[in-house]
Length: 70
Image (cartoon, rainbow, N blue to C red; front, side, top):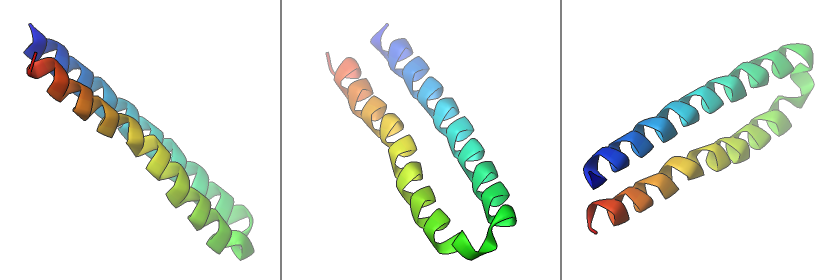
């Protein structure tokens, strides 16, 4: 049963991160199209935001290992 819970958690976090990254990139492209002179600042903020979005699947992977090894 722990394997199923870990699999569902991993799938959910992967889907959430994919949607979050897609929305982030869409807004980045939209912002660069509006103000091309801010491209450097926007790209820096994008990398920071993407790291925060990707933190959740990494935490879920660690929690899944705990679930599997119980």
